[in-house]
Amino acid sequence: MHTPDLPFRWTPALLVLLLTAGTAAADIWVITDSRHPVTGIRMPDRVIELDAAQRIKAKLSEQLPGDPQRATTIIQQRLQQEGPALQQMHDAYQGLTDAWSLGITTIPAVVVDQRYVLYGESDLDKALARVEQHRSEEKQP
Image (cartoon, rainbow, N blue to C red; front, side):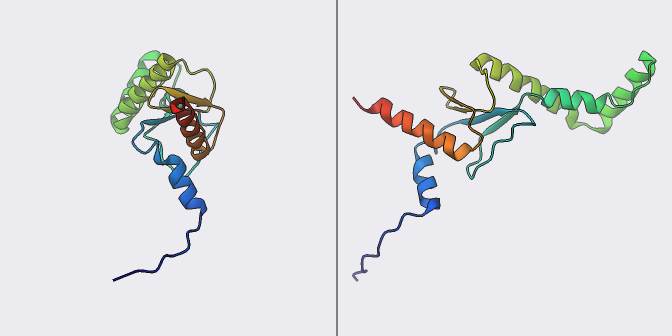
């Protein structure tokens, strides 16, 4: 059975798919803070917010008394009530360490395969397209 050839049309969704196809298997990180959100259709594998540890610490430290022993008791209670807080704090500091080890100097930063870094682009799809363009230019003689 023969199917007729359909006219081919470029759509924005197809263009985004093609532009990010080369990074489909890539490990994509977004490094930013709460004041510089990164948007886009594509979801990163990891988002590192450099101010996350500060925010968690501030939440745990809200309205503590001046007495250090009482403050310690209250923080311990808060940590027990908010179990994930310790894991979140660990993850936040691990993110800081990872960003520092990559030499990130500006945010937002999009990191692909821990090899390519694009600074200042808050649209992840545009950032990935630029990284893919650079990768294709690298492959040309």
